[in-house]
Length: 246
Image (cartoon, rainbow, N blue to C red; front, side, top):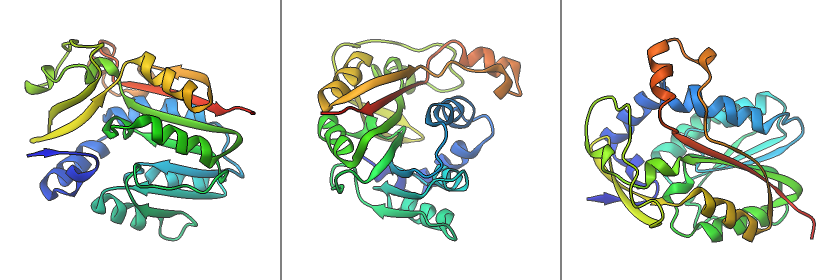
């Protein structure tokens, strides 16, 4: 069986295994992607934040604590929506159970739109980018992370087991659907080149301001060997765009 979108997170065994991986101290989400993302976000005081594919909304809690005015997470998984609701309890943050494809925003509602490791599950990214653009105030920012395209290009390396130190890059310019074995399940993701992400943002009306490939920072690692291993392969692509004037 192959899982599309957020559906795999509603498989009980998968969800439990994923959350253990996601919350471990050496998770790339925590020590590679998140520090860079927060740096790109900067000061959130007074900002209204939308988070697409918010997962458990852990970052939403942080952004509200840092002065964000409001936070709405959009999440397609029931399990993740429940976790997000629990994490946001006692804050002004909210979560909407909806896929990104079905989500319909109100125009010019947000100062900042985020998406972390979720957009590579979306087939029609152009439509989502246009909706994000519509939802932002003039000058608002859209910052997202995805699996780096060198990882999504081929699933050959993911078919193996153990700790990888290199990766097969193949069919890079053949964009589209990929079936990746992940935590005992087959998950459908969509491979796009760096160039395609860039061009889709321009077509949606964004000015691209920043692009990072998740260069590991030694101060975030407690293990030198793990730092050196992560220096071999880019795991994440993070892009920031701003809504331009008409």
